[in-house]
Image 1 (cartoon, rainbow, N blue to C red):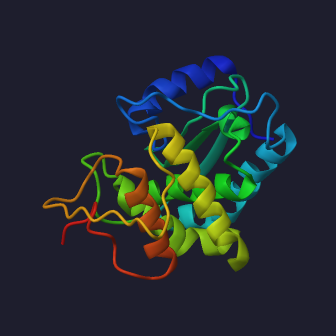
Image 2: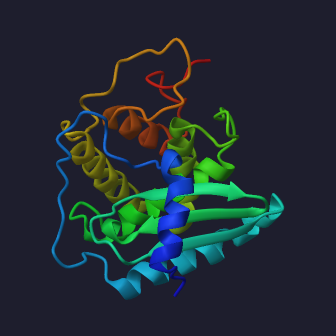
Length: 218
């Protein structure tokens, strides 16, 4: 199991914090849905992270990187996942709180890991820090990564779990296919799109459709 100490988690989190992809939306009521006991057991949590790291180590190596997928199991309410590149180290950090969110099973957590990997290897458009923007990381997650880690029948389960998770984070309605985000941006977003826009992006990536205009501008 690839764990990191509480002290190291705190230090690492400070350097990761501005890059977190699943933070609660600004100005919300923070309506999170926690389980007292982990929905994903500690053993399954670390096994999933370890297997994900092994599966995508060859991808990281093609970029000259060493992939590290790290888990912190200290705070059950810290429900964040983050990624960064530090030199030739590609790092993903997932907190224990993700295992306590009632919306998520291992399927949803795999999609979140795919999103974080998408920040590192999802391609353009990029942020000023050289990472794929949020929308592109979402698109790559279902277009490239998710089919490699889950069977077809589980793809929509993972997407719906993460959509529910995001909606609760932002205190917004749960996204669905009947209520697409009709926003058309003039400039590609580099910040987090709204939950419905992210849901639309997951579907577009999975179905090999164009990136939604609610975050992407040609």
